[in-house]
Length: 159
Figure (cartoon, rainbow, N blue to C red):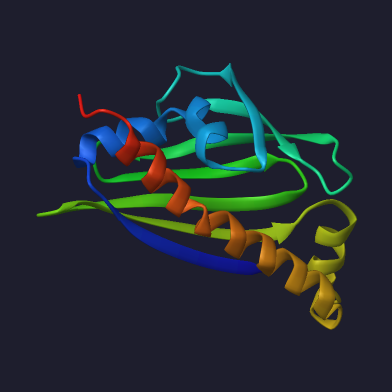
């Protein structure tokens, strides 16, 4: 199991940040491992929407992963879970309004899927520290990309 969080202050109002984050089609614009995103189920940018994203794999090939929006509180919170892919991830974006803009916290938790997930359920993965470190490094890198979100939103003209 791996967990990481990161936060930034974005000079935009909370609803503008919320709407940008809620639209998963924006992920390739600020997440370097996400190559493309397509809605596969439900209404776009709403609770219950399922998106298929193609993410960069270690070999350079794209790997499909599907994420579902599990919670959406306008201007305040978006939670999601990855329902298929190389690791089971759950996370969320938590927004709070400040005088200078919107503070966004991105929290992410991951555990391996497939054979590694099975090993983890048996309690052996903790003995394989390098796999845990690799997963932790990946999760930490993902949340740190929130800095790229800040750049993407602040460089856009305000609406």
